[in-house]
Image (cartoon, rainbow, N blue to C red; front, side, top):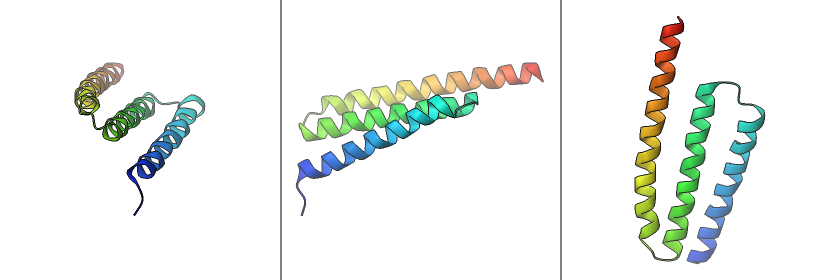
Length: 93
């Protein structure tokens, strides 16, 4: 059985690796606004999972509460931006 520290460390490193891959994809290969928004949303979710790992490691519920409100905020932001994009596309066509 692995310790709690080792499991959190592996998840944290995996999370940072996925974050860096998506960040470089965002910089070099993202040419569509929908792809851009989805990648930004995934990057924000990866940051939120890091908050959850850290709060679990330190046995503190504050980070998890912060993540809950942050996910709600990100979802509302993404839906408003996506609605504006769809409205603009319909006006162009």
